[in-house]
Length: 201
Image 1 (cartoon, helix red, strand yellow):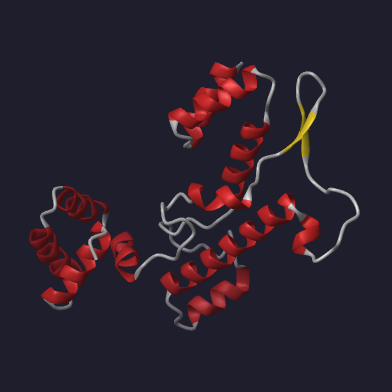
Image 2 (spheres, one colour):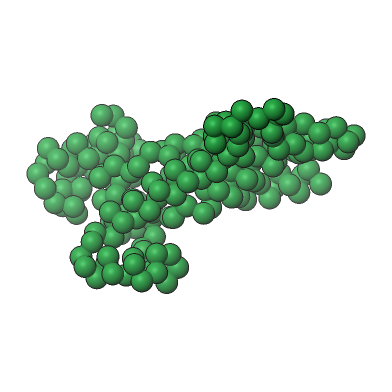
């Protein structure tokens, strides 16, 4: 069973080392790491994909459509929605970890989610909110995207691939020239953008 779970977790995006560790936990009858991994990834699955265009039919409804019709920048709306959703899932994770503390209640007994092992012993689940940001699919640990990241995502796939190849081999001057051609602005701004994307600022 653990081999099947390990493979399934890797398909969900869990790093192989983490998936293997979860498999070993399961073999010992401890499902806490699996519970935490699935719950955290499930929370992130409910956060808007900032690389996809807004669809009022799926989220936001008429209010979102009115904002778009009024001229609001779709990228700004995506960023706003994502930051709100990230705050929400973080708060949900905190509530699961310790609802009494979050709500300011001096509880007379320990309040925690526990999972029963194969021998019937129940153990508290691992802290969720402390690990949540590590699983951010964007790799930014919950931080909002920069202007350069937003502009990069708005480029066509071929141009993005060219830029990432240039950044991977540290050809920043060539990347800046391509950025200026595709995004506009002056060369200094283009260089600052590619430095931001390469993490060298």
